[in-house]
Length: 268
Image (tube, rainbow, N blue to C red; front, side, top):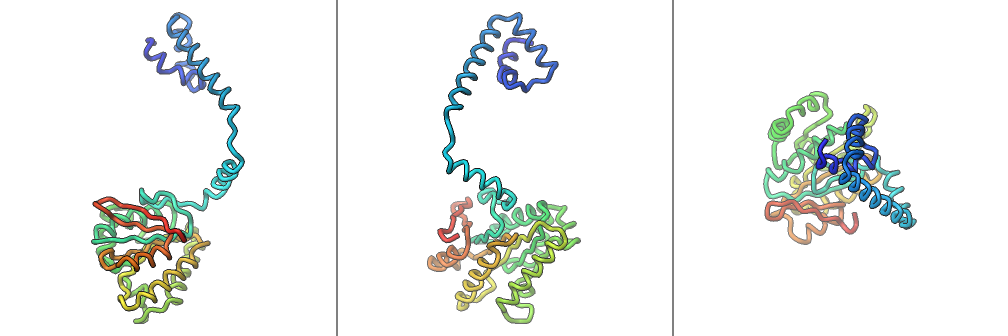
């Protein structure tokens, strides 16, 4: 073993992380090399002084309590599949602003497939793209998705079939349908329910009805093992409507200059 290699392994040696064979070779070299022996002594001294210094630093109680609380609730957090969003807590309600079909797929496909990988039931309700387009796009991106479709762990609905199965929109009926899917998912051993919905099917003159529905959904899922993303066409959402969306979602995803940005609601 040469000197350069020994110096690279000093930290591993001091931390007792070396395998027995490598450790024996290291110690044999140290015993016969004064320079490396001095380097080992120096590093050992530095480590000792740092450790002594750290013993005198104590974390404040509020930090200990916060870390303890986070660790205790770790099971309530899920991987969103969306890099900028990262981990989210069960009950999270997210709004996505989009400009084209590509924007929708860019967010919803990794979001949905991550849920499937995490043993969640997934629902995708589409307006802007057809059910066949949604199916083809997600299978093309993740071929094993066909297995989840075959087992109905993933279901894809058109907005007509989901929001207006009887020809008209009924807030209570839609929420009841969602919760029937949720309770059925839990009874079949799934970890929870991950949903992607759309707001673009609602006519502009019924905006208040849509916002009332979003508010009720937000309250209904807050303490449940449900994640929900709702998509809104950015070009059709004026500033005051975006404010309405923010008021009833925990997060807002939007694209600026080709990059996704994340805003957290003050009320979320």
